[in-house]
Image (cartoon, rainbow, N blue to C red):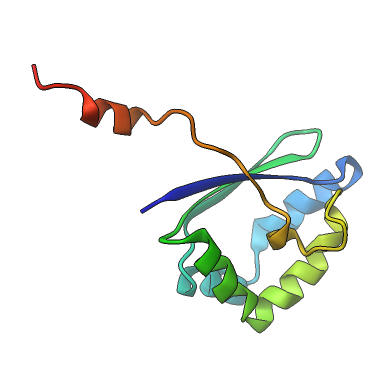
Length: 115
């Protein structure tokens, strides 16, 4: 299953509250993510607000589109939007800056010739 990595910028003055909000994500949001194809989803946050996300999905675009159809996602994105910088009016889940993979240990190990 492909994996995707993305960045967003949390406003530095909102980092503590952002972390607190993610300690107990709504159960219906968790269920919606699972049901719409988000796997192995994790967020990592640097003290200055740099947020890095990692997710596996058959298709990130399809998983995002399926989430966009859920009512709970609309509520969650509306509440989370105030935490982010540089979204230009887009909801956070549409503001992902996707990172290009440059190294994968497992992939390269499988390409090594047998000894």
